Length: 450
Image 1 (cartoon, one colour):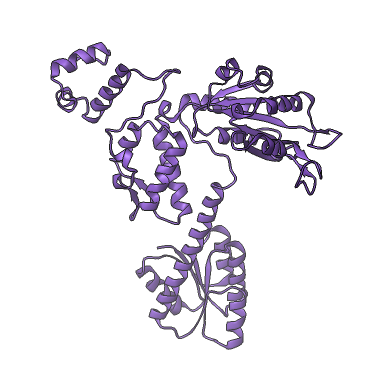
Image 2 (cartoon, helix red, strand yellow):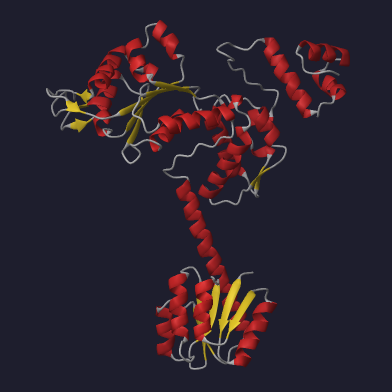
């Protein structure tokens, strides 16, 4: 119920209040003078303090002031046999929650104390909510318990303080930009700007203007000088997403910037020195793009000082529960809801799904679940339809190739065996084959003995 400190030099009043508050279920500490009350406050926090106003040596105002200075979220209730309008105004100005005149009615005291505790609880919940919201804003956090990812993060922290350029590869939605921000956060440039631009989202002329900037009058509509992102990011990091979508002519310009460490605005005659760390990313096979002439090999070597491959979520399934609960807390907090749980029958579905959209898709699934949840848990009915229908399977490339029918059969047999707890008779029935046929397949795929 909470902790309450009662301060009163009148023995009968102290006993009555102690009895009433303990009966309500509060943890009660009683003292009969203000000096002892101050010492108690210095040692521990109380949710609510009830204090007599007039006491020898240390009065209720001093107790009130001490409590408010040490514990701003706590509430103080003043009780006095010498009630007056001036004293009531003074105590309220100094932060008292309520002012009760003696002789008091215990029902009134119970009501006031209950409301004071509710206010304290609300203030603390709001403070906690603000802290949680801040933890989801502007901070780089990568959640993983996968060994490969932990290794990548360790390497990222190691090379973070250096100024070497980096290429990140991996499927869309694996978190390449987040990984780039993680490297920036562990660099000497962490206090400097981080800018990101998608090279495939703009035409060449717009991308040139965005990256290199322009002088006034450089082209029709250029009413003033504009710094490009390369110049603006000087001292910090520039993240070039989908770098393989950049036109070859733009690649030549970027190569010169990296080599010379200077940028020439469109329409300018004098270059500007820059100090930028470049992190590029692609969801394509960049070496294949070099072979086809789509991407310059010399630019690749300039960027590819350190390379990271961010594995898809399907290759680190152990992260699915961890990420699911992280996103659950995040969206429950952001939406102001009390969704704390993912039902037991939901997690096997998430674990069985291939997530072609990777972490981004899982995040969307959990966000949807929190939004639809009426109680405190995400249920199967809150999942998207394609997840609820487990007959829909995702086909992804494995080791650079499209999986064969045998690959898919192996995965499906493993999944069915997991769902039936290893019961081979039930697995055979589920697969629509006899037990002997299942035995042959298990032997073929070396899935264990019957």
